[in-house]
Every structure is written in structure tokens, then in C-alpha cells.
Image: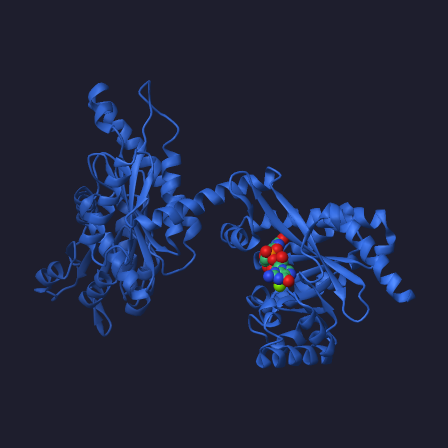
Length: 586
Ligand code: C2E
Ligand code: MG
Ligand code: MG
């Protein structure tokens, strides 16, 4: 205690008394940092803000008393012990002070440095002992993790919080596999070291996961606890989906993969994890604990070293997504992604004006996977950023190759779908610049397709980015128009060149008057804003005729051609070009 500086807060409205106290402290030991505050109001502010090792409150504080301040400080959660200083004639308040939570009281008359020091030292020491006792009651002696009592307390808090904010929390029950064997074959001391080692890895892992995940101010921290023996729990609060819980469980299992070096022994251990989600798997603590435990037993029965949700159906979905996520990571580097290109024509003269790049995933086991299945997963996991970059690079390179082969097709642009996540990354413009520079592609051949939802999220920032891209010479189109906000006000504000009417409107255009009217209105409005209109998903001649009557500018769809592999696009363009020329001659 002598080596550390002790922070003292003195609240006294009498300056002379402050000087007196300061001199007394100076006599005792120079290691006291004394902060003086002269009013009740100021004291309240300081107590909430600064941590002190000890507080000294004078009994007389203008219209208030030191007892008032004591009660305020205690109820505000002040952790420092408090000593009340009394003057002459303040007799009888000693008992009240102690009852109110004071550590001690000292009469200012007859105070000496020795008395002051003793009182301060005792108060601090007593507080530390109290804290040690509380720690012993709530923390596990071996691993220093919260014990069962504290875990139950935190769980109860988490459930209240989860009910109040209508979100989910997950309870992970972790049991080490074959721990008994290790305990029996190597001795208990090694068993203890292993439990400590596991606790450290769990704690470290959950803490780091927490600092990343906790963005909301009101979030409760997650808790790792040891219930006893080789049983641990992890309580995850405010999870967005059960997938978050699956991810944490999988990472915990991975974190146990590397061996523990315990006093010269290399020890391997795995664990089985049961997961119960609140409120789906139990609204109260007992049910939730029981169900997480049951799930853990199933995990053990099914071969250990894995996790299991309480609801069986959840296992498959979670596992499928986890596997798919891992596979998708590999897909990017493993050449499993490819691009198809779907041509688009000018309706009035039939010339090809562009090709849209559409990504495909060739999974080694599951075959071709549609972007509608893996793009949402890629967005959730952030993998959309490297995928998007790959798409950009590949399509720009490809366009350059076609261009070199036949400059006749020069006006044919290549359009790319940009996801909202790529937009919010903030460096899309610089990525684009770099790719255009590397490939030497003229930006006027490039068109970016964005959806309404992607740009609405952060409209102001997006407008700036869109302008930047347009200034670079890139064209911009709004994809799937009609499925989102369909706000013409936004269309006016965003620097766009083209809107693409979603296939869902084109599909019934010939037999639904309502859809036909909507499409007609969209085309008319877009033209007043000087935007070109593309109809997506045109499949029949009737649809095309109707669109022509409505003066729609361009179309894309199976009627013209399905998305093609790059090697066939050039060929298609040649054939189509020849056909158009022949028609013109006739
Ligand atoms: P999208 O951008 O609206 O692309 C048009 C989709 O409609 C494509 O589906 C295309 O194959 C399909 N399609 C075109 N014509 C017809 C037709 O006549 N009938 C029918 N039934 N369908 C037609 P695909 O390739 O499965 O792509 C689906 C969506 O996935 C795309 O919708 C786009 O939102 C997204 N996507 C595709 N590639 C990428 C990419 O590289 N990045 C991002 N972020 N999203 C992509
Ligand atoms: Mg598109
Ligand atoms: Mg579309």
C-alpha cells in the first residue's frame, strides 16, 4: 500500500479545514493525492466521474450534511470507502453514519495525523477484504471465471434485457470430452492446469469476439462461467441470428484444437457444446439451462467434438450455412467462381448495347449454385467485398479482350451488379480506379447496377460516391426498379443514367392491366427525368411488342438469350450483328 499513490477526495466547505487536512496528510506520507471539493453539488459531479481510494466528507456542507452526501454517494454506486468528519457539537451522528454506509467517522477536534492515517488505512483495507470475500463468493477459485451463482445472476439479467428489447440471447453449455481420463491418467494437478488453460482460451476468445460484436451502447457483455468440474457456459447476449451462436461455438471448438502444454505434458482436448436460444428454446432460466444441457448430451452422443442446437432443425440450417461459408471462402481463391454474360438490346433498332455480368459458383459437390443463394450469405459474412472485387476485375479484363477482338462491338458496355456492402465500404471508387488503370479499360464501357435498398441506407454518402463514379466516366443504373421504395424523388436526386424495371412487373405485363399500367407509368416518368429504361426478364414476343408500344428503350431476357459463358458471347455478338445488318439491307 505504501508504494502506490492513494487518491483521496475531501469534501469540505471550509478552506481552513482543507489546509489542515492537507497538512495532516503531508505529515503522514507524501504518497497521498488529495483532491479538494468545496460544495455538495460539485462533490456529486466528481463522485460520478473519478475513482478515489477513499472519500472524506465533512458533516457540515451548507444547506446539506455529510450524511446526505454519504447516502447519495452510496446509492450512486460509489465504491470507495467513506469517512465522515464531524465538528464540535455534532455528537450522536456516529451511529447514523455507520448505518448509512460510512466506513468510519472522525472528530475534527483533536484529529492527529496518526488518527487520520489509521482510520484511512483501516477503511481501505476493510474494503479490500470485503471485495475479496465477494470475489470468493462469485468467482471460481481455480479458473477465476464467474461461478454458478454469478452465472445465474448474469443469466437472469440477460433474460430481462432480452425480454425488454425483444432480442435473442444464446446459452452455450460446454463439456470437455474425456476429461476424466486425463484426470485419472495424468494426475489431478494436470487436470487443474488443463481447466485453467481451457478457461483462459474461452475467456480470451469471448472477450475478443465481444469487443468486435458490441456496437450498441446498451449491450450487455457476454459471460464465460465455470459451473463446476469440466462444465463451462458461455452466455451470448443480443445475438442477431442463431448463426452467431453457431459461429461462436465453432470457434470455441477450433480454439481447443491446438494442444495444451501442461508442465511438460502435451495434452489434447475437445469439447461438446449444446446451444439453447432465448426465448425460442425456453423463456425462463431453468428451461433454457435444461435444454442447453440436453443439446450438449446429444452432441456427446453424436460423436463429441461438435456443437448441437436444442432444436434439431436448427442444426441442419446452421451447419449448412457454416459449411457454405467455409466453402465460399475457398471458392474465391480456388477458381470456383465464374461469370456469365447476358446481352441487352436496343428495342427500336435491335442493336446490342450491353452485357450484364452474372456471377456463378461451381461447387465441387453441389454443382452450380445460383447467386440468389450465395450472394446474401456473402453479404452477411463480408465475403461480398472480395467477391465483388473479383467480379469487377474479371469483367473488366473480359471486356478488354472482346474489345481487342472486334472493335466493331465497341459501344457494347459491360454492366456489373454492386451490392450495398460494397457501397458502404467507402473505397469502391478507388478500387474501380485501380482496376480501370490495371486493365486499361475505357470507363465509358462500364455500367454499375445498384439496387434501391443499397443506396437508400445512407443516401447522402451514396450520392457523393455516385457522383464520383460518374465523374470517372462510369454509367450508373438502378436495378430491380419497382421492388423497393420506387421513389421518383430519389431518382431525381441520384445521378443515374438507366433504370431497369424488375422482372416481376414484366412477367404479367400481357395479362395484368395493373402491371401494364405501372410499367407504362414508370417508363413515362423515367423519360421525363431523361433516364433510359431497360425491361428485365423479357421472355415472350408479346411482352416485347407491348414494351415497344410503351416506348421502352432496351430489353434483356431469355427471349433474346440466356446468360452465356464468356467464350460464347463474342460469337453471339457476331451472329446478331450480321443478322441486324441483313435486315437493314432488306
Ligand atoms: P439481376 O441483377 O436482376 O439479374 C437478372 C437476373 O434475372 C439474373 O439471374 C438472370 O439470369 C435472370 N434473368 C434474365 N432474364 C431472365 C428471363 O427472361 N427470365 C427469368 N426467369 N430470369 C431471367 P441470376 O443470374 O440468377 O442473378 C440473380 C441476381 O443475383 C441478380 O439479379 C443480381 O441481383 C445478383 N447477382 C448476380 N451476379 C452478381 C454479382 O456479381 N454481384 C452481386 N452483388 N450480385 C449479383
Ligand atoms: Mg442486375
Ligand atoms: Mg434486376
